[in-house]
Length: 316
Length: 224
Image (tube, rainbow over all chains, first blue to last red; front, top):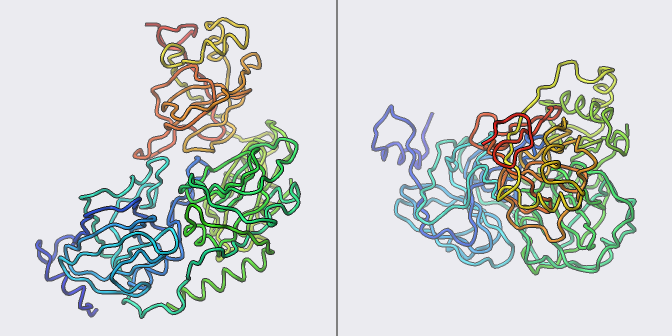
């Protein structure tokens, strides 16, 4: 097997010499930014214990970034929220910045080599809510219940990244870095978020599609609260039932909440709609005070949009 | 049984509209039967329904639907064959651990000692775990103990708090906001992310609260 230039640098730079464990250089966190966590695609298979998946808020950006640097798409990476951090690379690496533009002095959606000692500074977002720093080899974070993702509400998988942390770089690249991505997803304001009918769609009368909602300040990885014309709360109680990622629930005050990556696993509010899989990434880019509109489509169309998105990932 | 899509990646299977042992057994059977099936990402059991979340790139909803019918046709007639285990949760009732015990007593017209006695004498069934990690939805609260939730939920309910909300009772596994009346606290960890088995309780478990410490009232658990 022929080593890439970056892999050779790593092997030569290994202070423990050949035969030892894989060299694990780090990324030093000089400043973490507003809210920075380590995320992969999430922790599945534990909802029956009350544990939701967590995972990247914009899974499309995480997957694309990983593919660009030659990782498996589920590799752990750094998720930044609204304001990015400053990082110093202890050794040479290949990185890709994906998601929203946080003002880094590097091109986005493309693999970029960085050298030992190089610093990367990100700032406030210019568009959406989240940016990802993916590194060739992945972030080598411990797995809890099979995933490196931090679930902030519960502390499963650890908490936010802090100043002075060193994020170890793994040795789990699976292919060569790719060429820059064509047509990366671009977040612009006022894009409609597509939904399909939720389990209680027939309790409602299309109110969700009538107006424009504003993302409230109180939104986090658990749920995205919206403000707008109140949706009349349907009469009759309902029995607590399982809820899925992207479910839009309407509590008695009529202000909808989109259940997000750290959502509760069951709930008792009616759900007129559920965001389609292909638009989960848009939820991850919604910021407080952004406008949000919903467009109702059928499941076949939703799956067609998902196939198109997968095609784009395959093209990387 | 009805099956309908809840999203482009989930099906909601419903067994009636109420809480019953029969529905619980159906939920139990389906949840257990579908564990580990390729393409299924998560199962969300509840009182009378199971939400099945799947990866639409790997499996079609029609295939899951067929599988649900197949598994339910094989449901044992009299509930699960094995004897459920009984988990005992030691509780220090009242005082600083149960600041709302007196409110529950006032509302129910019982003495605090009688509230503790009734609460710790009942046999509870874990219908399912949901909402938060390790949180068990329990059946079996004596109806006399029904007490409405507090009007302004607390921002921080301590971990291990034992509480009554309406006709339900439960234990908060992690620090969280909550509107239930706090009547006691347990030192047993219901959720420990670092443990090999992070969640203590399982759907179908039987549960008893055992009074311990100064508030007294229970028969087991030792009186200080």
